[in-house]
Image (cartoon, rainbow, N blue to C red; front, side):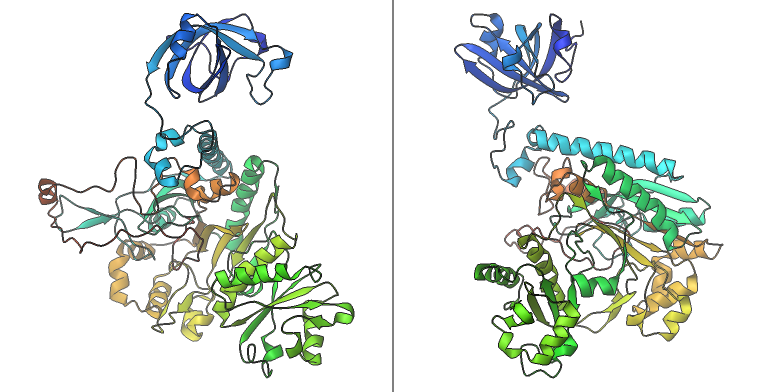
Length: 608
């Protein structure tokens, strides 16, 4: 018999009754019923119940052990009997009569329970992550991640893509986030940057003549944590294709995502095909560029209705309305609760009215609406008795920030929100540029490496804020899963695009020397995308926080509480690296960033 086990803890069945076996695993739980010990023994594969009778050598050893001790147990498989079968366990029809026990790994008293959720805080869990990962939910999430990545690889190869590796030590690049830098011992005073994404390398692979590339790529950004973004390190399915237009990228990726979510989604319905929603339409109808389509409710621009209104709260402002059917008879607390929700987002309040018989309006602001207002609203919003209308007024971005979440919250509270589905969409036609409200400076709004729609002519003849890019995102259930673009592969277009954003020709030549040199030797049209692996698993696992799907994540302050990173270097190591530290003035440690999704600024392909 094998030194440690003849079977795993998830393997034995009723057909094995009478067999002598050897199991090894962790002491998951122990129950003493009148002197008879019942032990749950756990390993990677499952749980098997052991029974130790009073007075036996096995009972004497098992009675003294702490939970999570690793043991080897020899014994005989016996039937539990029909009345004692545990249907929740694959091994629930049998148990092991323990005859001999050997302690393989002693355990101290554990700092939190493994066999139940005791509400321990995240910092403690990360400090003892090796224990936290023993929990059933965490173990399941990590195995889901493994299976998802294996499936992605298989499906990408079947779609004709070739897996290739790109460098980890690279040059710094102005791609919208802070680099993690690595000092060079052999080149004093110079630094490598860990790649924010393999953006330039995968484009160079296309220029080198490879046609369809993919990689499960580690990416590094010195960013604050969010619920849907882990600080420091994340993984993405990095993809690039040659001789393609936008739809050519969409077809294989949409097929991949549909099959992946059908395979691991637990039967939840998946949108197919994905609708294409222009960025500006998304902002107007849904209040953001990652709409949650699990509700069909939409925002409607009614600014023109109140341009000359005497109602000062709306006059001359951007106004959007949300009509919610079958809610007009809701009690006042329904409306007050949504108002409180809007206030929590920064609003001063939330205006609303009810639609009654004959489309008569009642509510706090009904008296301010003229007959003409009511007529236009009825036509524009398709009003019927039983509707409630919620209004947001202010600057466009301000209204979007409030009414986007209000739209989703109202749908949930009104019972008009789908659960247990995956609603995908492509967001397309992103603006190439945006204006900084404080400085007035024109800057890239999404991906600086993308091809502008209309090419060089558009850059030279259009207002920069009207230029659209061949850029696209995949969103699912209100989460951005991926960004991508058809690339700018022509040097003169690239120079002009960066010039508009304030970069001189010399700066572009310096920052992107390798890429520009490659463009001058025959570059094919190409494009790509990079779905975020961490976020995909987070959605499939139905987890609210991305750190629940990563084996060893950093905490909100980008610290590894288990291994103690980041660490200080001693003076001899600093001298070897030709570094001298200038420490900041001591101040209180920053609080972890609030876990809420926000819209990113410029970034290459990635969803963290």
